[in-house]
Amino acid sequence: MNASRVLLIDDEEDLRLSTAQALELAGLDVVTVDHADHVFELIGYSFDGVIVSDIRMPGMDGMTLLQKVRELDAEIPVILVTGHGDVQLAVSAMRNGAYDFIEKPFSVQYLAGIIKRAIDRRSLVLENRRLRAVAGKRDDLETRLPGRTQAMVDLRYRIRAIGAADADTLIIGDTGVGKEVVARALHDVSARADRPFVAINCAALPQHLIESELFGHEAGAFPGALRPRYGKFEHARGGTVLLDEIGSMPFDMQGKLLRVLQERTITRLGSNETVELDVRFIATSKADLAKEALAGRFRQDLLYRLNVATVHVPSLAQRRSDIPILFLQLVREASARYGRDDIDVPPNFVSALALQDWPGNVRELRNAADRLVLGLDGRSGEEAPDVDAGSSNLAAKVSEFEKSVLAQAIALHRGNLKAVYETLGISRKTLYEKMQKYALRKDELSGSDLKRPG
Image (tube, one colour):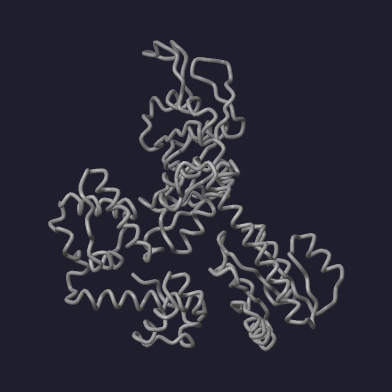
């Protein structure tokens, strides 16, 4: 997104369009929205613009919008507009965190000045966040979690924000999306980065030794316990504990974990003394734990304790346009890992990958990269993968996918072409040429409800 982007929300169409036109003449990039609910489709932690909203609107009003935006990111500037001259409302808005407040009728030049100052402030906030994230970081988040889609940009911002907060966190995502990578990134951007990161596979813990593995034991606590032993929780003191696939933990053990989360102490088996526990807990799950709790398979009180902060990791199906760049990075990593020369992967090979389903997500894509580097897939890297056994023309399939991606982006951004070419990472000229090639019209697509490609 461009730093001059403005989201203008007003249910009065004539005023909305005339204000947008005047602001564009003042050099601002304006996206108009007729209902506040639509705003949350367009903003995220990386949003580097400003929101201008009428207060008196049907459905979600401006004050409610302000509250919800601040819950998402308290430093997104929100400028509220009213035609009622309500001084008490203005004071309340400013107290609740509005950047500024303006009354109708207003001078567009005056509003543009407020917006430009708000944009400068937002740019400074984002730059400071970036510098704080980079300072002392052992590696780059964008290298570990590559991708240019908005979903991945937002994920990296959320990791930086939550990582510094040191809150217990629940990471949700499908199999193979990289939940452990996200957990390690949260640890590495936190103040605990130089302390242990202990990963525990809850599904692989031996049933009869689970308490000893987690809490430790004293000598003689059970047959075979010849010496005292630290448990994994105690070993991680000062650092982070990752509870991988927490939904697999036995139900009775969930109650004991809940006490640890509440009291931040443990008691080794065979001992009566409590041990203080300074750790951060991160849990992952591919299952919907809320549904598991309703079904009685997961403790609801434990769920509330774990998800102080929640991170959703997108699947490859939710970020198809990232697949080519991600695959090329995985190929480079595989070449280095196996001591092979770098492979020049043909563009048609990479383009075809985005047409395939990847139910195993990044893990499956990494396996494909490994097979290519090792020559185990029967190709030398000069052939494109078989996308569809019934397909006779790869170029046609690639064109079909490209057209679908463009149409989806135009519909998502409601015909705002600048938002489309910036999101897709292409130039304005390229977008216009491709729209002409595929006979795509923004006025026909801006109100459509298209299916996601693939």
